[in-house]
Amino acid sequence: MSVKQASQKEIDYLLRRGVALVEKEDDLRRMLLEGNKGEPLRVKLGVDPTHYELTIGHAVVFRKLRQFQKLGHKTVVVIGDWTARLGDPSGRLEARKPLTEEQVNSNAATYLEQFFKIVDPQQTEVRRQSEWFDTFTLSDVMRLLSYKTVAQMLERDDFSKRYKSGIEIYLSEFMYPLLQGYDSVALHADVELGGTDQTFNLLVGRELQPIFGQKPQQILTMNLIVGLDGVKKMGKSLDNYIAITAPARDMFGKLMSLPDHCMRSYFEALTEVDDEELDEFDCKMAEGTLNPRDVKLRMAREIVTQFHNQEAAEDAQEAFIRQFSQRKLPTDIPDYQMSQPAPIVDVMVSAGLAASKNKARELIKQGGVSLFLKGEEGEATRITDVEYQVPAEAGAILKVGKRHYIRIKVS
Image (tube, rainbow, N blue to C red; front, side):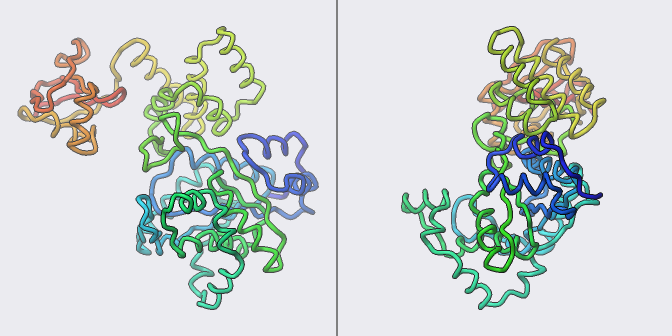
């Protein structure tokens, strides 16, 4: 695909929609408007293969990469296999554990499979850090360290907060921004994308490139979406996320559980609904002439369509309305085999309705567990006793939380 000489409207959309910061925006705007002399921009994204499952929060940056590709530019994705094998020896609660080469390769393969659901593989160059860092010598490391001072490193927000709070910062931690920055040198990146939490690291790459005789890369950071709690950044460790691979109905239900104030950011980050229509939604909701629930249904339908298709999104909406608006049970409840009564806690863990027995007890105490002894035709009984024995009653339905069910099948 050749580079497209983009219109002003296309460039405005690329550089504004869901974007937090563009470093030297005038320079990047000019490169895009003039078509970069016919040469595709090398648009870099660094990925950390420390987990096999990605969230729709990751997709925010992926979608921006795809927008660059539609204008004819090239995605350069670098797999952080070298740093993943090192881990993060800082001793913090959320320190990254070192991974084996096999684990890194497995995670990277799954990561790319999900990545390419959004980004065009034909316009993507996949590279690994080990290509250049495996041959790094001690002198190379010392030279890299000499390009940054301790004072400059402490400008990074999390380092600054920890230093002021008296929380230890290990020297090895200072290497990570430099290693990520050097990736941009190795790849001759023209642009680097990331979330707002990556701003410092992206700027390090921009600062290193002129030292190695390259033009400094442009920086574009994206607004991060919050998780299902509506407060904290979406993340697997907080269990407030929606997986990219989540089934359509599950994804739809979770999107509908979001607080209303999150809708605008989700629309901007994960849909193509234009700003004028979003402004109209906001105005009408403020006036009280538009029900936020209807806007949220539109949001969920648009997003599910992005990750699945229109038919799956419409089916998910119908299932949601049936279950929650009409107070009917879902039609696709999985069976759970039982031959005799069993403790409620054991059933919840065995059926995957709770991650652990402690979590199961917590859900029961919170009032989040109900039993429909007569199935769809009966009324729900809330289970409040953690010692409760689930009867082996064919057709009975156990409900946990708002969206999780099993139907008992007697064997």
